[in-house]
Amino acid sequence: MPASPEQINAVSIPIFDPRTVPVIRVDSDLPAVASERLTADALRRRFANPPAWTPEIRRDPRLVDREPAQAAVLLPIVQRERPTLLLTERSTRMRSHSGQVAFPGGRVDPEDADIVMAAKREALEEVGLLPEFIEVLGVLPVYTTITAFVVTPVVALVRPGFELELNPDEVADAFEVPLDFLMNPANHRRHAMVGEGLNARQWFSMPYQDADQERFVWGATAAMLRNFYRFLIA
Image (cartoon, rainbow, N blue to C red; front, side, top):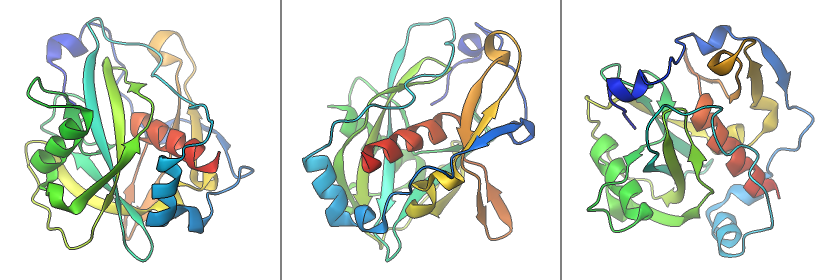
């Protein structure tokens, strides 16, 4: 979800390596979402009859100095024997959040009929995920990013057999992480920075070792996954 340089520079957003920021807690005392709750049928039932629950995180600590913009991301759950979540690594060509792990998604365009259509369109444009492979289950509460995007996460099942075609201007890589890994708080780490303003921040990370490569899931992506965890465990 790119913002212009003028938008980003409206406040001073510190550049840092999140891997170096101290971990203050790992939530290994919280229960994992049981595997039977992660099946396609169980997820359909959960969205058809959602529980009473409260999102844990709703926004980043501070916004850039501009009007908020609506955005949508797709949480694509691939229906493998062990379900996975399809994620992307943003291209280093992007002006904001370059190189970070993200969901397929972006700004809602005026031509989009609704949030769901925006999420599907972005997934098609970014990674070539065709709409016929997507079964939308529902949406999670909005999350507001530090760059003033009000993001609606659209949760969907994805039928295997798709072939991805990455847009190199936006996406450097696409990969899958087991859903049960992301829905286990023993893999949720809390980081904290000490300081004032944007230098005083806390966030989650969920680093996943993918063969010889670490996929460092953090920030807004990890926050929305944490809310998804709260939704499924409620």
